[in-house]
Image (cartoon, rainbow, N blue to C red; front, side, top):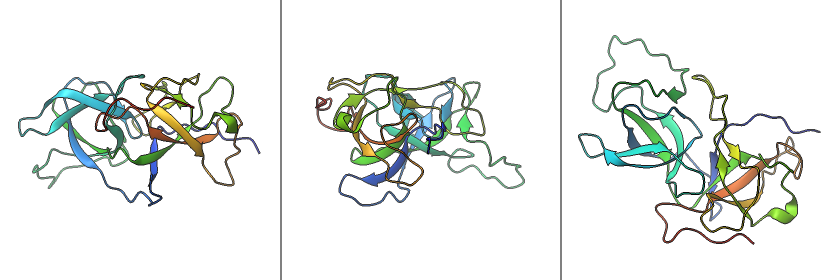
Length: 201
């Protein structure tokens, strides 16, 4: 059966020791006039913070260190009352047009393993496991969808690449080594880990 072309960014699924991911995340601020952010987007430190000292984030850059992946947003800054406020809970993004600091939840543990859709020009083969790749932040995400991020079009052995291929998602609706397969990856170039990363094998 052909794999569905349904990118959703990076989705945390488990830890390197085999424990399942159960929703842990850290709160970060999103500075005014940042790029659009969606659930599943890889992010890095922006180099600033909000007035309370909560670290800021920005969209990640291919080939550079990242801190993790957006898994949610706060509908209002911490401590702000939502009484008598109408909230659209279907919105799954932060828009660049925002005029106030906003807040995102980021899965930032260096030992997390994520699922991501294969974006290779030639589908990733089982022989490619252990290689590295960058992510590609593709267009097409909307206020009401998850990230369109997939893996980049080529593999690399570079130790500065964002992601390390760990395997294929073991699920009946996922055919390995075929177009749009769902891959398991670990952040290789993590800002909270020692050094840059390890070379692909």
